[in-house]
Structures are given as C-alpha cells and as structure tokens.
Length: 234
Image (cartoon, rainbow, N blue to C red; front, top):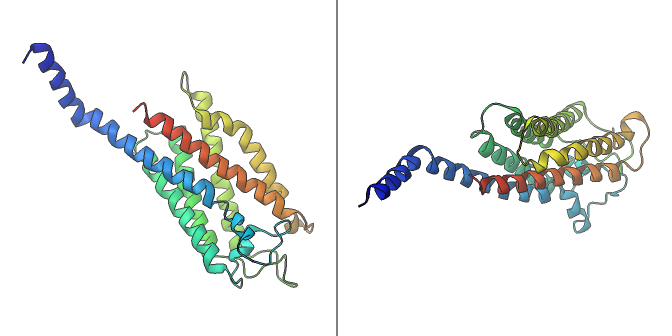
C-alpha cells in the first residue's frame, strides 16, 4: 500500500470515530426530523378533517379546539390527532437540539419542544363544550386558555429565535429564519384576530384561527426543508 493511500485510509478511520460517523449520525437524525415535521405540517391543520367528518361546527365561527371539546362526538378522534402531532413535534425538535451547541438555533428548537409539551397539556385540559353551537357554553376554561396561550408563546418564541439566529449568522443560508421575519407578524396578527369571543365580539374567529394554523404548518414545512438542505452538507 502506498504511503499516500495509507494516509487516506488512516484519515477515513479517524473521521469515522469522531468526524464522518458523527456527521452521518447527525444527518440521519436531521432527515428523520425533517420527515416528522413534514407530517406535522399537515396534521397540525386537522381542521381540514372537518370537511369529511361531520362535527356540526361552522368553520367560520368555531375554534378548532371545539372539535375535541369534552362533550363533542368526535372528541377522541381529534384529541388523538392533536396528541400525535404534539409528540412528533417534540421528537423532531429533540432529534435536532441534542446535536446543537448553545445559541439561538438551539433556543428555537428548544422552544418547539416546549410548544409540543404545552400542546399535550392543551389536549389534556380541553374545552368543556363548543361555545359556537351550544347556548350557555362559556367561551373557554381558565386551564385551556392558559395552555393555549403557552402554545402560542412557545411557537412565536421559536420563530423569533430563528429570526435572531439569521441576523447573527454570516455567510450561512437560513431560509427558515429569513421567512420567519414575514411569517411571524402574519401568524401573530391572525392569532390576535381570533380572540374576538374573549372580548365579547364573536364572529369570524374560525377563519382567523385557521389562517394562523396554516402559517404554523408553513413554519414546520420551512424547518423541514431547512433541515433537509443542511443535512446534505453534513
């Protein structure tokens, strides 16, 4: 064996212990995470199921949470979809954040783990009934309002962290962070616009909330494509 070839083999062996193999393992984790987020981008918009599953809820004036309210006929179906979605988000974020150093990207993925955990709590503490179709039903419970607020906070914190990370990065392509600069204000505006019933002005909250959910689905898709692009260079 020639000296140069021996050096190449030795280099590959060394990289296999701490370099190439580590990068390959991270690439696998990121590919899996990207796949999970692509699924989440769809399942997080489970309100689309209402076009096939008869819930009796008006999509224009009802919250998506009403579909898995405690007294609703399809409570189990929508609760399971929500729980699976939250679990996938936590799994994807966990796969990524464990391989990142401290910094804004890690903070963004960590916020997504919190988002998933709060989403689980949101399902565990559902609305008691569907206020858009049941007279006398309160707009929400304190517990469910709190968990929903935490879900929103964690989501917006994730987007904001990636925006900051993109501004701090030099010479790096962070498409998700660039898009988040525009997506974050749209998502926040849609979420705020859906709060009408809480201040005594119901009507149209379902449309606003579903626009917000579409922005969240787009955010997950952007993160998935970013992961896929980056793992190709690991």
